Length: 317
Length: 317
Image (tube, rainbow over all chains, first blue to last red):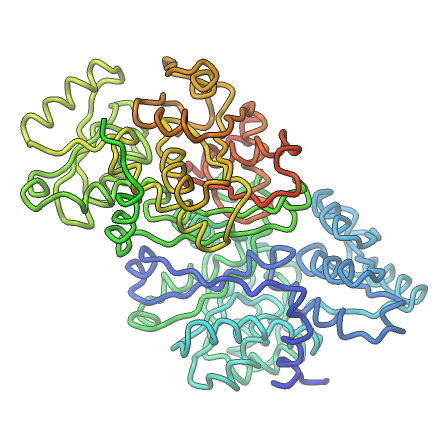
């Protein structure tokens, strides 16, 4: 296990600077009044590829030497990581393969292809995915970039909270959603160095609370296929992200499905921005734990904005 | 007819500065590639009350002397102007009355009440509206703030393109949607002074093309109740706005309903922001008139973001 360092994160920042946005930080009088806190929303929904994962993917792709780069990169993902790898490799002009389940929505496959990657389909099972992926790597020699359990990826995600810290100054707390823990780990990596007094909270759907249970138990617990509207947060912690979460996170807060949908709706309605359900878990947990945040300066990481605009969760209510 | 001057606009800027946002200007690699132009989106959807009209309303409300202010203000509107008047008068702490059709959605009435104004209902006819409104003004002595045919309102709207000009420098063209012509008139007022070489285009729904036909005919033509998804653009030009439009606008461009909906959809999808249909008419007309804008630096005024998230126009397709 190679744990990324603060210097790795600083190097990542220089490496990816030409390829990602310094995203804006928005504030909202309405939400400040509603929560009693002073909230600073870091808008990674405006990031390249519509998600913070463009940071980690760009750091991994642009950090390859030319020989490895020529062989390309590969990953498996039916979501934002595949899109981000396609974005970064397309930008560097190297081959990328994303293994996706045959059953993934065509729109998602098209989006991944849109930035230049090749989509290879597998059956919607872990065994098929692993077999197909192994074949891709064996044939091409492509470098495998894991969605979160990769030091290059975590160092890249850490650049987000560095920007936030530099723009708004010391915060009492920062909250980010947690799935595999890539963003939370990057946040821990950065803030434990530049702002060690800032408390780091993770927000998780109650329906996919494996990180919460891991945190309370003191070891990784992984669930099989949890069901939540926050589709970016279904994956389990791995050793690298567990390292950061177990060492630096103050607490993990949970939100019910309806609370996540309601929070997403009021973010769209009041802030006029498109965020995905995973991003809204943060606000949902702040609203039900006001006593933790009231009177505090709180950074809220809105992780992404990739949603199917024709299937919005409040339409199904 | 009192025509607002450039100095009125500068005074408006100072007057409203504490009460409105200096809204961000966003760019999009995707839309630049798609159009061949360099587009600068002025995001008034992030404005107070979710719409540029907070500028004109604030200028009118905060420009009143104390005696008049004590009697309050009044307007009739079933949309963004009512909301903006409520916002501005609530902020000054003076009474405001908004006459709205009994048949307007309850959510809109609640939004107007949310900032502090009193809603007085009328029947959904011009005669009822005028009778009820006259009664309100007679009783209260409230100052009538017209949604657009008011020099204070036009001066206020003109502050938007001043910010745009100051932030991004000289533009080849600026395009804004046109209904009654308040935003377009403010844009003309400002740019004809600070950037007389910048061409000003207005974008209008084909289904509500009264400004287009007025422009071509050389005199005001008003339609009765046009039907368009761009519900902010149904009203006709009046003498003050006609003055600016006829003197300073280069051309008025039209878009079909489906083109407006498609443009709105891709703005949400690609820029991750919530804009209302009226705002999207601009991009729709750029996309069908690429030859006018290709290679040019173009300001695009996204006027507002107040939509019913549960009734999105592409859901009905």
